[in-house]
Image (cartoon, rainbow, N blue to C red; front, side):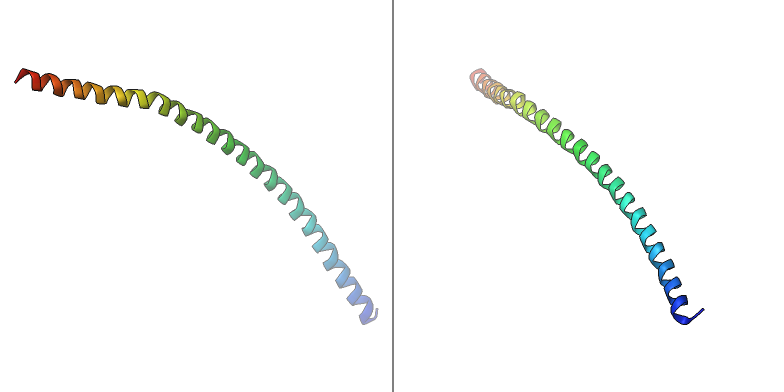
Amino acid sequence: MTAMEILVIILSIFLALFLLAGIILAVLLIRITRQIKRVTTTAEKTATALEGFASNVTKVGSPMLIAKLVAEQVKKYQKGKEK
């Protein structure tokens, strides 16, 4: 065997190893991408649900706040009337 044949064999082995490593990394990247997509979909659904919840709390909270302020004013008025 000549030096060129040995060099071709060594390069062929390294090429095969890099090709195998590339295929494995591509498969792992595809799996990770799918998992990231699932996580982002779940996060988006959760954010939408929380947005709706916050909207409902705001709708209910505003009248309750107004009722509380009115009740406080009525109490102050009654205390002032008693004196």
